Amino acid sequence: MIADDMNLARRVSELASRFPEVWQDYQGWLRDIVGSRSVLSVRYPNWQAAIIFRWRLFYFVSYVAVVVFFKRCRKTLESLAAIDYRYILQRTATLLAVAALTLCGTAATTGILIAFYYQPAAMQAHESLSAIAHDISSGAVILSLHHVAGNGLIVVSLVQLVVMFLGREFLCSWFTGWISGICLTLAAMGLSWTAIVLSWDQTSFWRFKIELSIVGSIPFVGGALREVLSGGSGINSVTLQHMYALHSYVLAIAAIFLSVLHLGALILQEQHWKAEQQRFDLSKLGERFLRKSL
Image (cartoon, rainbow, N blue to C red; front, side, top):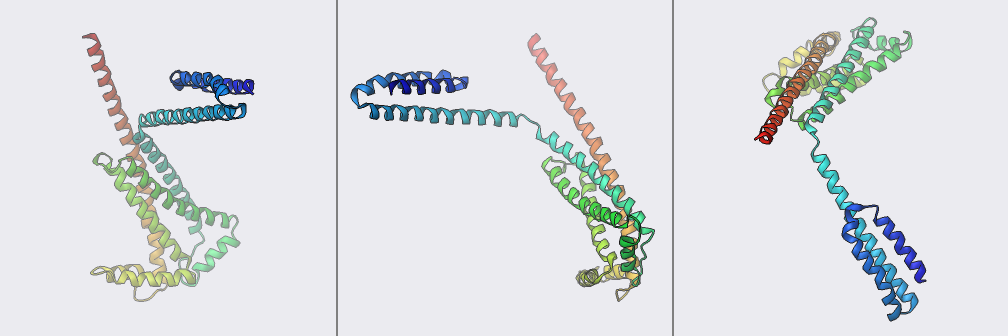
């Protein structure tokens, strides 16, 4: 039994020696545990001595494992703290701006294809969309791409605003990119809202009617906004034409312009920021060189 305990202690020693950051500090403790085996054999029966010895080995392994774990965690946290997260977030925001521009271009291209067959009239709108989906070659694919691109633009824009905020891109130096990102998000939401009305089914009709009543209840400007959106007192073909013009011309052109402006502003500001960081690093290097030379 003593031989088995010694083999177990040897395995523990080999395991602990794989972690040099703690082995130098705790190898003396392991030697004391191994040396106490003969004393335990004198004081206690063999089975009790084996239990006490193995318990001490288990306690040693557990203690060293905890120490190694926390030391590794500390090193990991120190390495993570050295990473420039602001640059990573800014780079991520730029990539998301590229994705937003791609989605905006996809939505615009598919929207132009849909516009060839869509009829913005109360009696023909829903039927024309149904004909595009079922009678036109690849019409269902084009409609699906248009919907996915529109919804994806909203998601990407919202995520990008969060990333830009975490990257402190709301400061004055990033003013153009920050404001254009907010406006792009609002334009994407407006496109999604007007697209629901353009489907002109029962759900969109009654939903738009409720929303018009909410808009009309806004103080001072509610009545004027309601007139602009509805084109009159009722919801009819004029209303649909207003929504079509707002969706296809005003909001779509604004979204394309804002996506291009947003991406350009982020790229220019990122290059300017990298140049400033490089100048800052060079100044630090010069200071260190002067200190060493003196």
